[in-house]
Image (cartoon, rainbow, N blue to C red; front, side, top):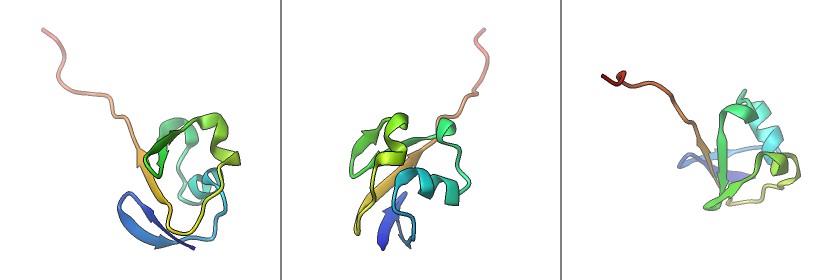
Length: 69
């Protein structure tokens, strides 16, 4: 099926979000997933079915920056 992942059209075989993360070598604990503009709870990743035309965003949070003085 064709979906958009982070704005890029891709053809995928996976049927749910956890399998998609696994296929992309993304650890569920390291990313927040948005499906069709809705944040998905990590507990629901394996139960969230993907459909043709879905828009998926992987949102990574990065630490860092300059130390406070």
